[in-house]
View 1 (tube, each protein chain N blue to C red):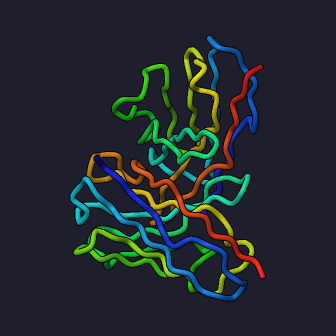
View 2 (view 1 turned 180 degrees about the horizontal axis):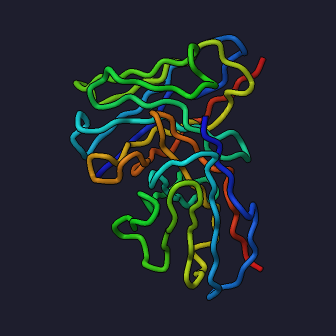
Length: 107
Length: 122
């Protein structure tokens, strides 16, 4: 099965900062990579699909890139509402796998 | 509006069974695959199972294969997760989620329920 890793596991940042989270797959997954945001006690929210496509209604400060085994999520200017945990998720061969998550907290 | 509502969670003894339900509304249920995703307290997300819109194609995570069964009733707009042989490692919030493929968000989870808690304890 494909393993997903994320780095860093925790990120401390300030409002207005540009932040980047990296997600790596143990084998190529083409572009089948999505990103989610989860706040405490809430269900996750889909942000990015097919590695770099922004879900309708998601602010344009979120962007995704990558293909194959290495991917990234960038928030161009961190807002108060963005402090949360972010997960990547892959699909291959009818199996879905999430990364372990990256918590973005206030510096 | 588009909504998924889980039910059936609770406290169950190790080795026993539980059936979760996921009721959908606000969209054409038969067009979409539905997933179960779980999250143990303080831990990350784990995909559990998917049933595609035809109701025949079903896939499971290795951790639940042979113990859990996913099914759907398109006449009731409901998906079920039958969980047998529960262990402490199965304790989690269980979310049902819609696969985004019909909207072009292929192989993603685009709509989520609020979750139902499963506790496994003697």
